[in-house]
Image 1 (cartoon, rainbow, N blue to C red):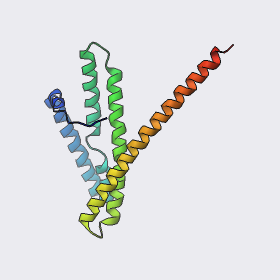
Image 2 (cartoon, rainbow, N blue to C red):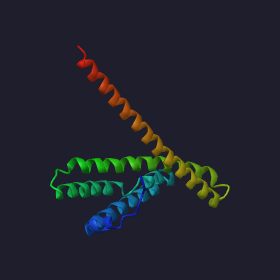
Image 3 (cartoon, helix red, strand yellow):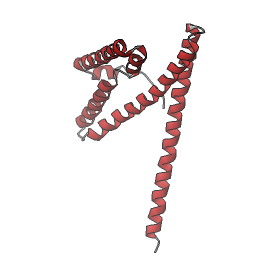
Image 4 (spheres, one colour):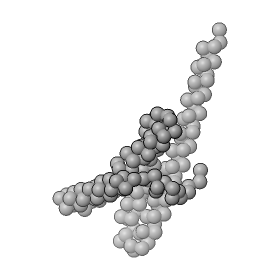
Amino acid sequence: MLVTLSPSALKQTRWYEYAIRFVLGGLATVLAGIMGASFGTSIGGLFLALPAIFCASATLIESHERRAKEKAGFDGRRRGQDAAALDAAGAGLGSIGLAAFAAVFYVTVPLSSVAAFIAAIFAWAVVSVSAWWMRRKFRTVSRRRSSESWSRSARRRSVP
């Protein structure tokens, strides 16, 4: 699968959807700031690490996919839910990489801030891509296993 930039997707988004993303992202950032001021920067950082825009993007992705399917004359509910779930899975894998970034940065920043950023970005990339690859590999294996077990059980039922 090749990742490409699609400027046509920007035309599909309505102005108020951008406003929703902006407001929800800003509110999440303000919440992280309040948590940081009340309980310390470590706790505030944990809340800031939450992808602030995820909630808004998941609902917008769901509505876009549903709307596109309905425009074609189909019920788009399932397609929208699947697209939002795929986005959530990607956010989860990215969060694993973000944790690796934070850990490497925390350990290496006393030596040099520039080196810490370089090492942390490298760790984020390696961990995120590895998590994606393992999920893809595991998902393929589990699908194959479930289809094999289904075909075996179907053969057992058909044998007299």
